[in-house]
Image 1 (spheres, rainbow, N blue to C red):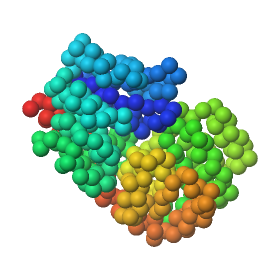
Image 2 (image 1 turned 135 degrees about the vertical axis):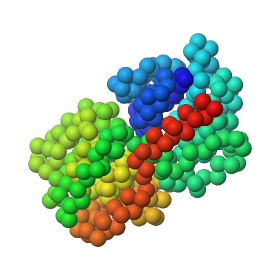
Image 3 (image 1 turned 30 degrees about the vertical axis):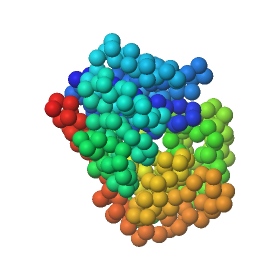
Length: 341
């Protein structure tokens, strides 16, 4: 079967949508033909996402930023794909109504349940998925794939978790804020924790700008406990690290899979509910919005997590029950079942 995946990533919206669709796309591609459809613009604000997809050797069809519905219809008339799966917040009820008649099946990867969705299936891998009242916005026949049993984790995590060692004392801290950081939030956090007497392993995202990278590299010259990683193998880094400071996107599920107690940084509105739910269930130690960084004593918070072994072990115990390491395999098996009827 031929499957279109529509996902965008770039300067303003980050790379989260693209990254999780690459996981789904790689698994779907084992039994289907997968083609990505991505918006682009004159100022190249989506270029980082397109580049990431092409690095994984997927075919990418670029469409305009404004007239994308009509362009998807024109592309479909030529390609005759069976399925369209969309992962984007830039959709509305009209988007699904217009496109549904051109495909055998339409799916949507959702986080917030913001509008009526005339689709055949919805995927929401988040811990708060069951809290959203989907019934009011879907058809009676719409299939729901909800919750962390459908987590889209890369294969590297499935392989690495088997050799994770839980240490009695914290030695290594992971800092990761995703693929891009236009507001230089990484520097704000590093400035608060740089003096901590532990190794800090800092991930440089694929779309970090040169100015930010240069400033981070300057810090590593002054502080020999800060190590930077470009094109990091995240599973191996999480295998090494004992605690983390992380953006509150899909990385929180990866950290849970790798038994790494974390402090969550909310970088976008859609991350807030997941982060708060995880804190409420004691799956992460703490979370706060990035705007509050100057009011929060992150150094003190991090030290609490570092010094309390029982606290960390309690978080790890809960994490083990959270994530299905093989969630994407389960998801694709279900989707293939729908496709093949």
